[in-house]
Length: 141
Image (cartoon, rainbow, N blue to C red; front, side, top):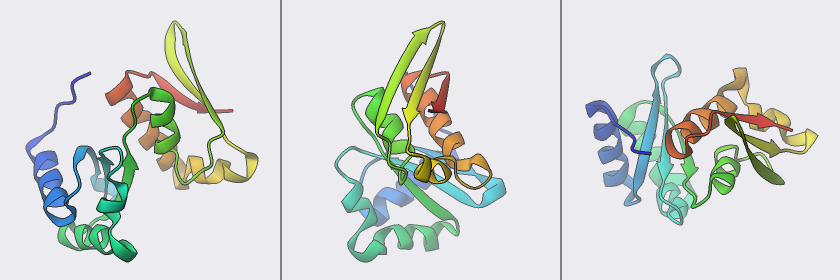
């Protein structure tokens, strides 16, 4: 699936890449929460975060927003697990009976982290999974 980025999204990605040296494949901007989520190329998360988190903090200061990072993956199952981080996802199953739904198994102790405050973590996972793997929904089991 091809993701279409706005000019503002492209500017945010350019700023992120300049500050971190890592590749951003996508970003979601949440204006009402003053946050932006960057989809970082697989294997480049350490580069994006930087020593002691300095690079990601520099991006936050530059954009004046909270920055969250999700690492890209080669399969929809691994992608969903990464998108729900820092929750420990034990297994992801993709159901293709009509709608394409990812069922993520998360231990009870990590459900709060997977859902996030006001459901923002799971909503971010759903939006990214829809954009990059044409998944209709992400549900916790």
